[in-house]
Image 1 (cartoon, rainbow, N blue to C red):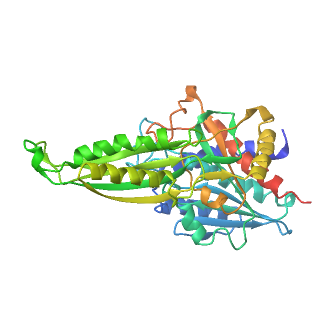
Image 2 (image 1 turned 120 degrees about the vertical axis):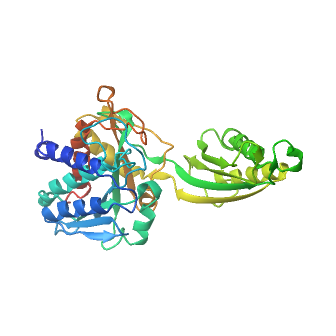
Length: 393
């Protein structure tokens, strides 16, 4: 066991305790008030200065005192509006809010990594920018960018990692190219003419138009897109009507469009513009009108080839084997893409699935939990990644 690994393993209890503390008191995006204060206290207690960015975001720059590049290490902070199931001793105490995506672990791992790196200042040249980002679930990264997180000092490269319950504990996933999907969120209002369900010929039924839309837009992903360019259109909300014998005036639909390929979001061939074209055509066929708004929430996350190669080298050292590294792509989205689209970046997936520990539930599930044995490995990926990238020449 090398000295860095030994130092990190001695902090295992600390990283687990931090993760559980953050898990018990989750907060939603841009409302991470107590979370931000705890992060600030920890960083200041180990001798680092902090700066607030975009409200609840925290940035801390650690300068080795020797010239070199600046590497940014990023963790996200926000939780989800989910009521936690189960009865863990560290179950959420904030009703209806839960860390169901692993961000509690991300905070804890980066905090402990900052502590280890602070005590190993002589091993690197350059600067490390520790970034704790709010509101990842709703594209908070772009706000951090607008507030200058990549400047002063200018960031040369960025690393991030995500606890991942789709991968067994003890394995990581590191690929170059597109690794996570782009995400567009749509809201739609289908307008018809209300009436009596006994006399549908005197009304214009938006319900049947909405049903036809849900079926018809599936042609985008099955007939219009290249099969090697995965695209998923899902409806998550459908609302309309007040009573069983009344044809409503309007029906509301909301959902997501995800895609694992680079595309011009404003071009006619984009999944979302194809979606809009079909929706409007279906409404016209049913004599309805529709209003559609689409928010381009996340662009696809692309790992830089050199950074991915560098990360694979680090992971092989951390796990003492290159055989634990898998390739993979995931249709879920991540706003880390806002950083990696501007500077070379790599996003690592750290497996935490262990059936015996019931940590194999999907992300965003009320029973989501992690295998805490992987936390020290996450810390080590941060630390050794920074030391390798900033190795003195």
